[in-house]
Image (cartoon, rainbow over all chains, first blue to last red; front, side):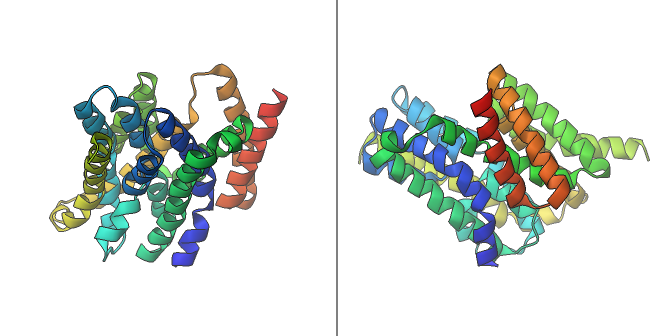
Length: 213
Length: 101
C-alpha cells in the first residue's frame, strides 16, 4: 500500500516541483539563507503558508507567524475527515504530511494509513527537493512555460478527484463549496474560503435535505 | 537562534498541531450524531473549493488557457477514468495551448 501511495503521488509531485523551486528562489531573494529556506520546507511542508511566512516576516514577526498558522486552519477539517475515514495508528507521523493534495487524493482512493504515508513521502521528497533545487540552481533551471504547465497539474488533479463525487446531494455540496471558495478567492482570502466551504457547505446541504424530507 | 529560524519553528509547530490534534480528539467527535453525513459532504465541498481556488485566475489569458486545457482533462477522464492520464493530458494540453495562444 505504501508503494501504491507513492506511485499515486506522481501528479502531486509534478505540481509541487515548480512551486517549491519558486519558493526556494524567492526565499533566498528575500534574505533567507540557503539552510533556512530548505529547513522551512522540511519543517513546515505547507505551500501557501510558507510563501506568506517569507513575505510577511521582514515586516512583522508576529504577523509573519500568526498569518501562516491561520492559513493552515483548514487542516483541522482535513484531519477530522481522515480520522473518521481511516484507522490511523501512528497519527504523529501521518499527520505531518497532510497537505491539500494529499488529503484530496486520500479521501478519493481506496487505501489505508500506509497508502497515505506513501502519498506523503512522494510529495514531501518533491517539495523539499524542489526547494533545494530552487535554492542552489533556481535561475538556471527555471523555465516559465514549463513551470506554469506543471503547476496546472494541481487544478487538474482536484477536478479529477471531484468528478466521481458528483452524485445526488454531494453535487450540491460541491456547488456550495465552490461558490463559497470563489467568493473568498475574489477578495484574496482563498484559505478562509476553503475552510468555510468545508464547514458551511455540509451544514447547508444537510439543512436542505431535512427540509425536502 | 535567528529570528527567521524561530519563526519557522513556531509556524512548523502550529501547522503540525492543526494536522495532528483532530486525530487525537477523534473519539470525542465520534459521539456526535450525523457526523458521517457532515464529513462526507464536507470532503466533497473541500475538494471543490480547492479546485476552484487553484483553477480560477484573474488574468484573462491565463484563465482561457486553463479552461481549454481543462477540456483535455475532462475528455480523457470520461474516456479512461484514470487520474494519471488525465493529469498528464491536462499538463501537455496546457503547454500546447499556452504556446499557441
